[in-house]
Length: 294
Image (cartoon, rainbow, N blue to C red; front, side, top):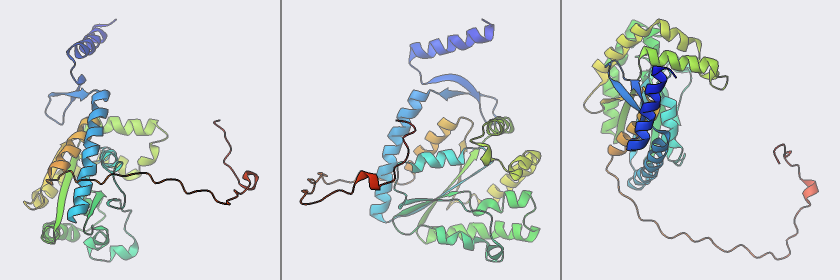
């Protein structure tokens, strides 16, 4: 056994003996410091606890008729989709909706820039989660030259006012930027390339973003400079450890609205209706899915 393998085994043994919830080190975003990776058992337990709180959070939003918008932005592979999935999986999709718009149509390209996002804003008692948002103009459109200089700077001027309008209308706007460095992004891109079930997530623009890493960095800095406003600040999530990022983000989201556990009436299963003269259709008249896995 090599020295590296011995050190790794020692760390695992010490973690088991001390009962800590970490097993190995992971670099953080540009700090040079080591970040401990969460144990799967601890992660699953804590995620289940937070998801139970999310249900209470959702009930509070519905009861108080609040309007909540959560925006997720970040570089490709930062973990936006995975974080959104963990937030929404225990929730009612009629109350909590995910908005992930495709490329604008020719007609939408002629509209006021924010117009295609407005129909997806929540009504009272709803939460809308944007998996990418109007910030496309400050990111990919800016870097890939999909918009003009005039359109870009008009966005930077208009976006803060647009968001202030949303807040004044009673919408709670929460914005998250998931942060990863170039090395971690490369590792995740490689996993997608090697995994046929994840290869669909890759596009030519995603791969081109590697060539324009610095351009994206400059665009993000400029975006923050104009749009990190008091009424709707940006919250940066260190996303190098996906599990930790999900827990931290959900915990922070829950902290944004003081919510209470609402009382529930006792639910009692009613008795089955009495069978009086019902004759079931013969099973042979129905088409069943073949039992490939009996």
